[in-house]
Length: 455
Image (cartoon, rainbow, N blue to C red; front, side):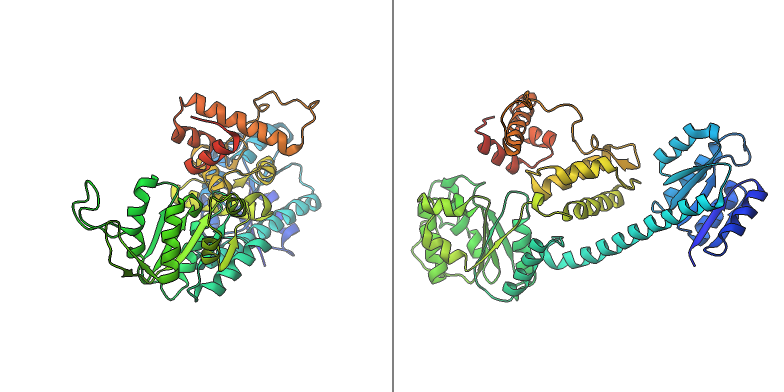
């Protein structure tokens, strides 16, 4: 039988409620704050009815608010129903803002109150089920490099990872920035027979072209000015392990030829060297560009694509993952609350609407950034849209509804104006502009390229 705690300084009310609820619940009672907190900590009831007017000041509300705050601090999931008089509506609203789940105005109609209590237990049950599901999903996510999801697209990704991990075939991962391509590569490595050997990532788009060859393949002493000693490259470091080539589409034609030779013959030559060096490394590649267009345009070799993509995995953008958006949002919320001792209970209904309708250009990375910032900045038990960085004002750029725009056109225009405005406000500092927009720097570069913007 579920436990409920009745907190009221009037003995007659405590007896009335205990009599009316005893058939459905195990009823605990308390007449003052000290007794209430002791009973709450000992029995951990899921639902509490709380009269704000408690001794030593039954005419005031401070002792009641102290109890409410301490209960929610002890158990943020507790459902506290505040009982108030008609003249105390302002206090009741303040209690809800503090974290109470509902309020009920006296005089008490036991049948009406039963409905409120039953609903509170139902909400608590749903939240407990969701927490258990999230814990189970988190445990599952440890198998997949921290990735989490239960939509059909992500279940297909997890299934493919399981199947290919035990093999050594090359894997090609596609998806927008922020969808978790490196997490896929790490999950494949972690589940493979090479899991105790090195995982070596390299971002082919982040290293200048004239340095990338030596980073990949290493160099011999004297190969060029400044090469004072022999240096191994990333490919050699991945020997017996996994090499992750992020943004492989950024490789020059010459490097594509050298990489193709390595994949075919399993040997490399360092820059400035002539010796063939055998390397046994599993290769996982990734790109956020349309590789089919790159092949058609001649910027990416078709034979290299077929060598690197024996198995192809596509990561869906967050906006197409349905209920995964709130699943991930709640996961990040709990993670950041646990890490910062902040007592945020969840998202307001308006925030849920905004999260589910947002286009998520930065995908999971953007969602994580927004939730983390909101947890740090909010003063409310529920995160509001402004906490999450969603502006309440009309979007910049002067989009009007009499223009013949598709929804995509309107989104693109607003997105471009926001990016341009942020870059201007930060005087061209891309790192600060990305932070202000709630996206990563690579994502902002991608968006700038998409909209033809320069710093």
